[in-house]
Length: 460
Ligand code: GAP
Image (cartoon, rainbow, N blue to C red; front, side):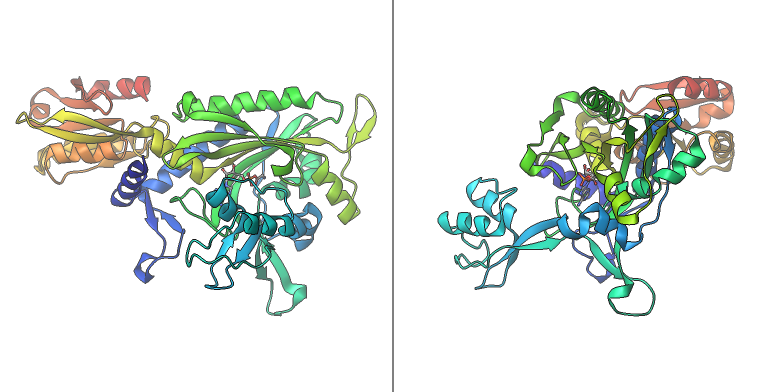
């Protein structure tokens, strides 16, 4: 199965989905760029998410808040004091590791919620060796904060200290009252955002699964403290599972993991992770948390601003509680690639067997919906092909490819997940028909050019 990850990573690079960042300088560890097709796929995932969770709902509004916020936001939210991982150093070879990963890899023991002292005791009791030098000579673990620090302005002192946001959620909390006043929404309602988050992860890895810079699509759904939060939580969980289905993830590969109290984030009273069977194991894809009134209460206390909601019907004022479904965008993209990747044995025109790689992406997510392939560079064929391109370019993302053999061009479109290829050939000149090839079945049919709009509006 590891080998599948290698195949996906190679395909992603070869076809322009994901590249190592700043590769001309040797790259930067665990940092990736999204190429011409990667950005289309990522945008399609985000568009579908936004449409599903914001535009099609009457109880949701959007937001795009700043990445560098007032640092007091992060003090109030508990991230400055509590957003940490424990690190240990090998005194012998100076190797630095995440304590929980070190212990879990060596012994299978879960040390979540244990103090640094307790973790060191477990390390020594189990004689956990340094994976680099083999010695057992560890420092006591230290808490390492995951927030990226930066400076505002030109003064290099404590007053200018700021943070890159560690989650997008705090924007929704900080702007809660402004949104309430301007959107005329009544509780229950949600505020959604998609944007970059930054975490100084100690051990990133597995391609784009864990990186230091990534995008989160999440929303804070505000409810009354008297509402049945368990019921609302379960409803959202069901909606998240439906979204997984919409983006082509097999429900048998999606697992719910109830997070025990000691492993939950500091703000959560209940968390369920939606885990997916990635080639490197069953890992967290998305999550849903019941954040109670933790964040709004903390901001009310630290800012001295009233964060209460006034219910016009009951005449009660209260700090709303929050259910938060959260989706990592890159992890979603990786899961869609894993789910879509297929290898099939097919026969060539000369009867030989060969492997066809095909990305069976849901049509809505595919970077290109249609590829137009004139059989040759003959001007009369290209003229018709370009006219077809022009007639569809406003409705669909269309690729146009004229070089190499038609067989190679079909393979390329299969590998990038294009649902339909249109071939313009010499028959086209005579009867104004083209060949339309279906990515999944490889079936080809002759269709009149005038009938193409109808065909695609039915199939796409
Ligand atoms: N506001 C809640 C929150 O940020 P989280 O579980 O810490 O929750 C949200 O992160 C989602 O972001 C995760 O479910 C995961 O999909 C993604 N994610 C978290 N850390 C990541 C990382 N280092 N690299 C890529 N994606 C990450």
